[in-house]
Image (cartoon, rainbow over all chains, first blue to last red; front, side, top):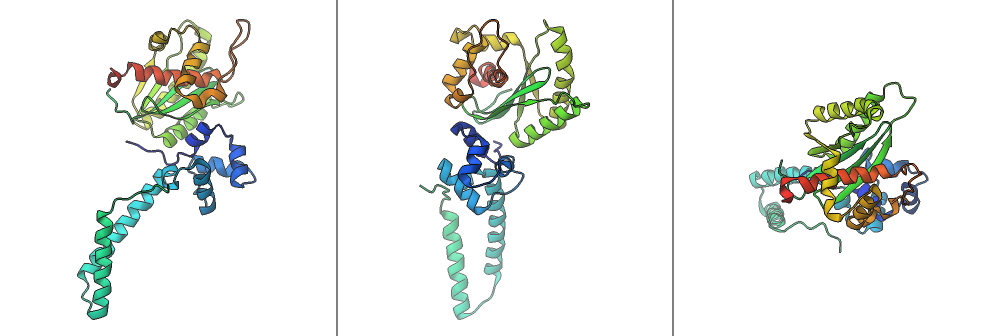
Length: 119
Length: 171
């Protein structure tokens, strides 16, 4: 299945809001920003992303799934690399304990299912 | 071609100077819709259309493109719309997206079960399926009036709907 980079336009169209109305609600002076966010030309600021979430009552990760997937994939790769480094490290005593805690946490994280819902 | 319920398709209705589009995620989910006007002063109309199409294909990433075939009974409109259709086809080809041209008869047969006769009737049926379209529903056209500007969007959505009705996965 192919996902859109941004579902902002879909949700705006469903709500019936015009770009101008949405821009006013979020707090933009012009409609340009909203259009660019809809086309995924620029990344929304944290304030704007949370504003969209609050307006449509849909988590940011679901509004911008393409962006979320890219970030999540990068994070997974980095965590995997860190895990490998920790497993190969030869620390003693207190440092070894911290390494163990980190590895346990990483393992429990793997088994935990990821939920993006905020409700 | 068999599709699952989450397949993205882009449906187009092409006129002499306008393109209506609708992006479906499966038969029941309408993600995006709208219309683009080809600038009348634009010398390179086909390249403008190609750019617009590329932008739509990039944004929507559809796996299939459905285009309503212009009616052969109207040579002038057909002659004007032809370069636009060719530009659309070449943009889709560049992205490797398969295309299906849907004839007027196929469109009508998809809506036959709703007992509709006019475009206004079809638009009303579509509003029933996708209530978010209600604000875009143009007023019912009188016989002496020209077609409302916004009807092209409903034509594009109807094209997409007709495609889903005729696709093998629907049977």
